[in-house]
Length: 272
Image 1 (tube, helix red, strand yellow):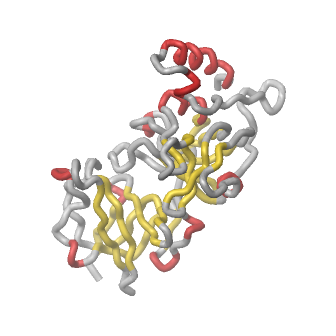
Image 2 (cartoon, rainbow, N blue to C red; image 1 turned 90 degrees about the vertical axis):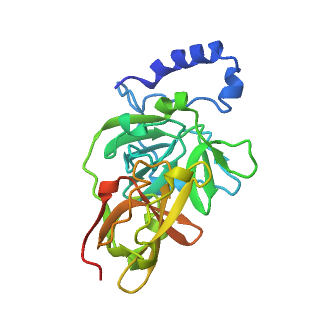
């Protein structure tokens, strides 16, 4: 593992060559840490994800002191239903990272153990769900996308671990599981949507994403959001029942499921 200090000289060189000044490009100072103990190249974790989210303040807050989180990469953007963002989780919860890097899975695959250095990043809320990104200049949003070239300074891959989704029913959904990987059991797509596709790839310029609806035996429902740019956007919804794995999100009090891969939809049993 290379010392964080080895990244600083290339970053300064990049800024000096840019047509935009370093100060303008990187609105907040790049993270800077000293080893926690002699001989240790990266700092020790200081916060859990739950403790990190507790630092949020209305309007957004840029973290000015060292905050270090150890977590597991929960998401996978290989099939295009995520773009320039990802989700990490630990035993206390999950959080979205608005990182402006495409194909994040090539560097940080699902199940990777990561160390997140949060100093200089901004905690913000959208739809009532707290995420981490960059300081936003747009007053409508509390966070913007963290620049791609700075992502390796903030997010370090340490190794790989086995990641198992938490198995839940629609009845058991709770905001405590927001931004984490879950498996929803005992569901099927509602009858009125059968024959339709996950999203609208042919109209993606106008319809960026589409909502479909899962239901259980008690007629409780769960929204499924799919990008029209996803590789499986044009696939027809499966007609059977079973389980679906994805990232659980909330918009206000409404739970939403973000499917990562078509193979994570296992609706192979007869409809109920």
